[in-house]
Length: 241
Image 1 (cartoon, one colour):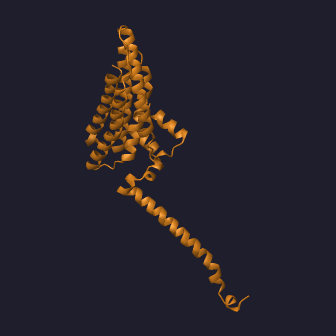
Image 2 (tube, one colour):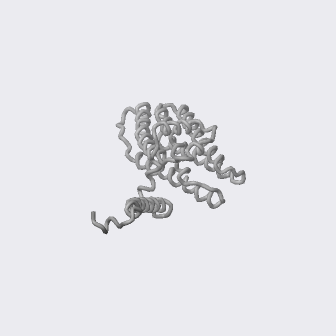
Image 3 (cartoon, one colour):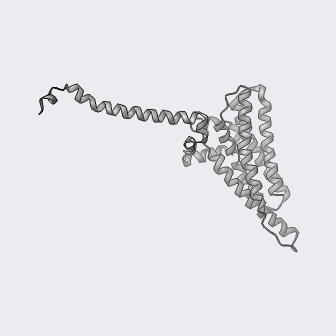
């Protein structure tokens, strides 16, 4: 072996490898830090990677949250989603509801048409899809956003992602009730939509109350209940009249 090589200290030779590894770890940590920082500033709002974590949900958790939306009395939905809020309800439940009320609404008008008027032909109303998309997407996006800014203004520690999650799952019951609203009996339709709206509104209001826990803004909880009932009545009047 070359004498110059043998004169090198062993600590130097052994320490060279960890130095490279340490540099690699430092670079990785820096990248992770940059990614985390990007999700916490306004740049992260426009990055798809900022939202991928909110779709990381398995079937068991999904079913548990869907069932919770049908039993609003407990008011513990926020505690269930605290560790992992998702945007599944905001995206997929809203999208499903749009197509369900548009298609079943047309089916309901067809059945009513068959009962009342046999002389004229019936045509599929494509405008139902446009109205359903604008109303459902607009409601599920804007209403939670408005409550987020309102509660932040009032000093509450509100979370926009959790609000979107709450309102998204609150729409699930309307998907189920839409299949019953096809029945061409007006009294039954009103009974179904009012019960569905009441459950959905209670789910939002009770969980919102348990989240903010401030009696002085009870009017906020009441307004959330009224808005949810208003959505239910809108679905009935526009798509299943």
